[in-house]
Image (cartoon, rainbow, N blue to C red; front, side):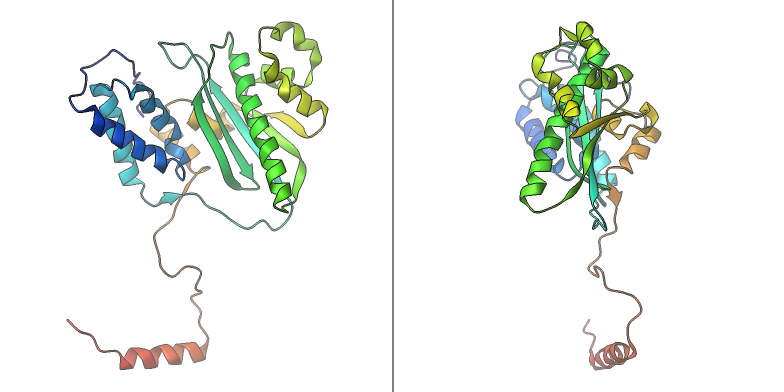
Length: 270
């Protein structure tokens, strides 16, 4: 998405054929299953499905142009040679929606070096501070990693504890582990102190990560091209389509002679 564009409900003319817009955005939603780099953009245009307008269609077509130029991008899965950590990066864009003043939550969950879960969504209530919005996003990532930890255990996959939670807001990291800050967080719903309970049980550990190194930034706000491309390398990787798979280049002499015999016997038909 354009880093300066702001989509609103009332700007622009209503579309004559809103069904085409809805079908386009619906197809893009399916694509986010394997393309986390477009999750925020698709989530943004999905907010206007009831009464789409011209700027919303322009934003959706911009996503399609980006997808066309990155057809080879996808998730990369690699085997784990040792016990892997389950780690999560959470971020929030405070009051990112100008009309409702709600914030956007986003998180990325890695099993070792492999991205296994991600989310970009609008928060259900208005946050009164940036620390509150970041803490809510931290709570969502904590709940998701807890569920994934139990799922992996039932599947017989052993992971290395503690589960690591990375957040780029110092106030949120302090609230997760220091009960002295309780007086400042009375306005936050009780269920979001789920994070503090997990830290007290020593199943999770919260760490601060600088905003420059925060990959979840891609799921909360539109970024400039250079920043977007940099963070995309931590989510998806370009791969050229190939039918060779994992076939090695250095064949044995017997295989080479067999291939040469087959090549001699082949007949080319125009």
